[in-house]
Amino acid sequence: MSRVHIELPDGTSRDYSAGTTALEVARDISERLARQAVAAKIDGLLTDVTTPLERDSRLELITLESPEGLEIYRHSTAHLMAHAVKTLFGTEVQVTIGPAIENGFYYDFYSETHKFTPEEFDAIEARMAELAAADLPIRREEMTRESAIQLFRDMGETYKVELIEDLPNPTVSLYRQGDFVDLCRGPHLPSTGFIKAFKLTSVAGAYWRGDEHRAMLQRLYATAFPDRKELKAHLQRLEEARKRDHRKLGRELDLFSFSEEAGAGLVIWHPKGALLRTILEDFERREHLKRGYDIVMGPQLLRTDLWKTSGHYDNYRENMYFTEVEGQGYGIKPMNCLSHMIIYKSQIRSYRDLPLRFFELGTVHRHEKSGVLHGLTRVRGFTQDDAHILCTPEQLDGEIKGVLQFVRDVMGIFGFEYELEISTRPAKSIGSDRDWERATSALMEALKDTGLPFAVNEGDGAFYGPKIDVKLKDALDRRWQCATIQCDFTLPERFDLSYVGADGEKHRPVMVHRVILGSIERFIGVLIEHYAGNFPLWISPVQAVVVNVTDNQAAYARQVFNELRAAGLRVRHDLRNEKLGFKIREAQVEKIPYMLVIGDKEMEQGTVAPRHRSGKMLDAMSPADFVRFVLEECKNYH
Image (tube, rainbow, N blue to C red):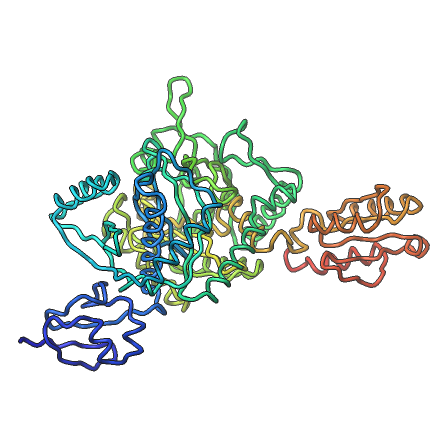
């Protein structure tokens, strides 16, 4: 029998008989590793742990402690859920797809007669537990496309048939566990007995293959972890996330709303929400002016010819809205860059003028499908803190680093940690390979010089250039895409932008597209959830409420209110003939930072008794001292 030479990650190697499985190698190393191994990498290719080793190879054993192992665990649990659903509902339900996602998985089902409800989750989980306890082996099979099509057609699984018909390969892989079989690339766990802790979380609708013209499916979301302790901790985080949901808090705090009368994905800002937004926008203007940006403004509509020149019409028009005025086509802007380039072209530029930094709080509109709209974090109309830096190639490195420092400063103010990711050229793009290489290299070199770690996201750049994406980590350790830095050699070429260099000749500038907070709407949604609605004093739309104990103090309470408002504080009063405890509780529900209690003692002494929303009482102080107290706490943000 022939032998194979197997190299292990620690640099050691061992020889085995050809056909030895990765699991048998694990057992040869240690019984503990054999119990923990859920998959293998053979020469870098992820595969089942039962895969035989037929040639000299490099072998890495995958455990649940690795991200890959956890993803396999969750994908196998998705199959387990589909198995349970089929045993409970039979031919009444068809299976479609069930991938692993961050912190869990989902599976899409089609049924003409059955509608899933949360009340059924317990029964599905109970059946999943039975199938897991049975420790059913999970086995891979390969068969011809034609045989697989016939197999699933006989089972009445038409969605699986469609998937196989679209596959180009002559053979396909299936996975069986007990009497359940599913189309899948794999790999999977060795058996259902590895699955220990899971929980169904919600049900939602989803179009087949994301096409709104195809059938509506039912998507069961769930989560799974290797042990119950991790699952419990995750479920507690989910419960906290539900409490912090910006859509829920937005209603409760009366910040914003949506209306079907107005249209889906279009935000209506209420007084407190509009004030919160204004505070953030004023902060943005100050921070940009300090860093040498010029504030500009462009129109909402631009002629379609301009969008064709820029490449948006060919590469982005499915996300745009178009209209016609007096026979001339116009596009509602999804981005602000075109107006900024027109400003640049309005006069001859010298190398001495550069860099130019144009900043606009520009409202844009994008055609998002209704199925992906989600509160403030995915809307059709939003405002970006958009800027475009036009500079010489020699200035590019410094400008990118300047934006990275800007991001660091601002995220520090809000208390956000963040991760960085470079997204490279997508399949649908414009520009030369040389320009893309220059742009990508510029972003990477700037990050390397600053010592900031980053990941690479292949093929997810903008159609005109690569980008650095900044992913914020909120209080629940969730990631949110907000800031981005894009490097663009292509649009300056398309719009024939130039500057006169020191040599008296024309040269092409480079363009940096960047946002710091990103969409103001999205960022406010993130802030609401990050702070659970308890905004820091400096951005709270209402910083304090003046409350009287009885009607005897009403006149003095109005006097205090007027004094605080005149000093620039965002304050309101509650002089209703209600019990003090009721008014305090209501202010706490509204998450107002300070309640200024006024009784007879305060009225006699000309003071207020500040109470923080946490319940902490401050020493009595004069209204003027309270103004100074608030301004001192807020001074670092002005």
